[in-house]
Image 1 (cartoon, rainbow, N blue to C red):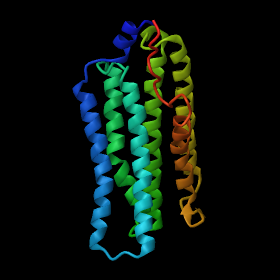
Image 2: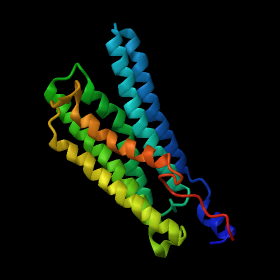
Image 3: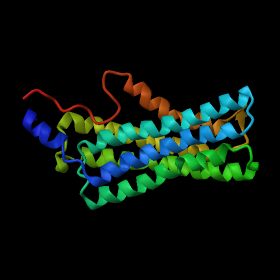
Image 4: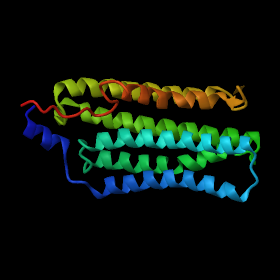
Length: 218
C-alpha cells in the first residue's frame, strides 16, 4: 500500500459521533474522579482511602484501555455506516454506566445480594464493550473493505480473536460467586483485571495492541 493510499485509509474527517464518544469517555472518567471528592464529606480511615483510590484506578484503567482501542479503530473505521453507528451508540451506553455499576457492586452500604446483582450487570456491561471492540476489529479486517493492507488484516483478526476470548473470560467470572474472596478481595475483580493486563502487556511490545501504523514505504 502506498503512502497516499495509507493516508486515505488511515485518516478521515472527524465525525460528530466520534467527538461525542470522546466526551462520553471523558465524562465517565470524571464521574469516577468526582466520587473520590464526594468521600471528603465522610470520615475515612487509611484503609478506606486506599480502597477508594484502588477502586477508582480499576475503573480508570478499564475506561482508558477501552478508549485507546476505540480511538485506534476509529482512525480507519468508516463511522458513517449504519452498523458502525449502531455499535457506537451501544458502546457509549455501556461505557456511560460502567462507573455506576462498579460503584454499586463494591459499595459497603449495599447488601451482599445487591452487590452480587450489580456485579453481574457490570460483568455483562464490561463483556459487551469488549465484544463491540472485537466487532470493530472484525469490520476493519474484512478484505472487501480494504481499510488496511494484508499484514494488518491478519493482525487485526488476531486482535479480534483475543478480544472475543477476553469477552468469554469476563463472562466466565459470573460463574464465581461474588462472596468468594482472595486476600480479602472478590475473586471476580481478579478475573476482570485479565483484559487490562492483556492489553498493557501487548502495549509494551514492539507492536501495539490496536490498529497498527500505516506503512510509510511506497
